[in-house]
Image (cartoon, rainbow, N blue to C red; front, top):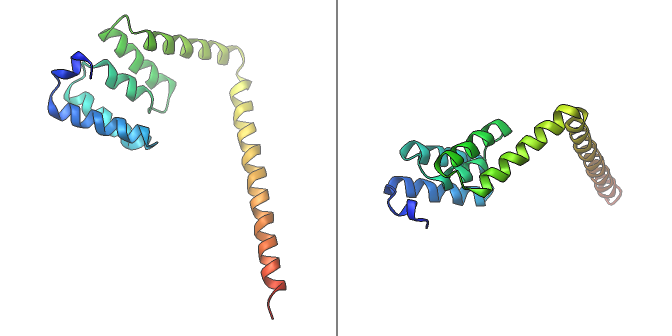
Length: 134
């Protein structure tokens, strides 16, 4: 535990730990709720802001989290690097707006192919079941 967490209120520590556990388990909604509650108890711990950045949904929210980390610790290299990455992505998207649409289209095509395969497997299973009926 970092030194700034040693003096944190017990409620903060409980919420922060539960939020990290939820994030590790992939429950971003629960992690988000718990980490936000931890921040309401004590907003002066950079680690809680870094964890919150990992579960929020938008780059704007991530940016706020990283900026809060840098307010608390201007030397935090993780927050600085992540902000730089968000800036680079924003610049790229501004000059190449079709890239985001292309990524969405690729995901949509993948899901369509996957659903088609599942449908064909289902049809084959139904046909096999029908043909095996007495």
